Length: 298
Image (cartoon, rainbow, N blue to C red; front, side):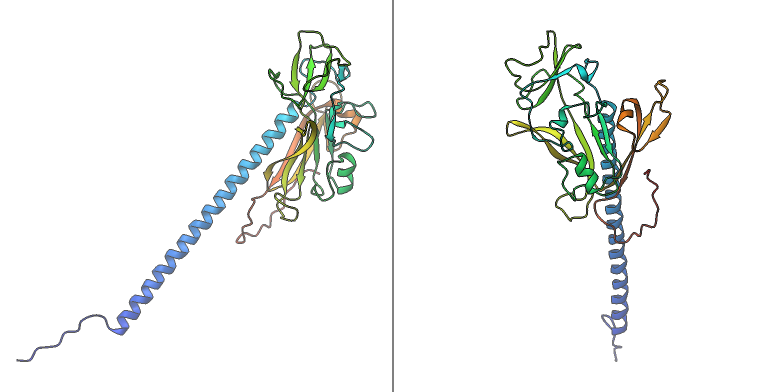
């Protein structure tokens, strides 16, 4: 009796077909994984970009809305200066010592708000000596704001600058106040921290040449026992900052015209502002070609 031989296993053709099908499935899975990962990275970059833009805008708006605030002191002319005031690093133009402490410029104009429109290395350095060549991205605006904090300080910190006022008289001093200040502020008075700030777009984030534009600001900080304007960066990927100031020309409290570069003599008429930020993600997406044109005020 003859037995018919039965084939066991796979033929070469079947094995090759199985390998081909497996390779196709694996390729599809890898592509799916890469697409999911790319989509996740894009969403993460967009979310981070939106968060940075929102934080930057909120920070500028908070400072700008309080520009010129001197607590209950009515005018900056009522403010005296203590002998304790000193700046390790000032940030004003040449020939204007202790610029950060003054809300009146050399011409006698109100200077709680200031700006440099479409800055260059030359104009940035001329307006603010603490900004070195190559620090500010050309064509962006620089915004200056001077004010005090939103609430009185109950425990002043040594080395910080405060405005002491009772509503009639004011004294700007570095804590601790001198034993015999040039201006006597009768009680009851309160101390308010003084907060000058300069916003600008820096050409780099971590080191010069890294190609990541960053919104930074100069703030008044105690350094080595003296106050200095130091750098604090807020949001990476900010490519442009543009400001338009609303000028009230008829004293009705509403802006009649918006100007990108108002004269210093008109700063006291500013009642509103338009802030424009152009923000990109920190990491480049090599799969995306940006052919859009962005209209930012200039």
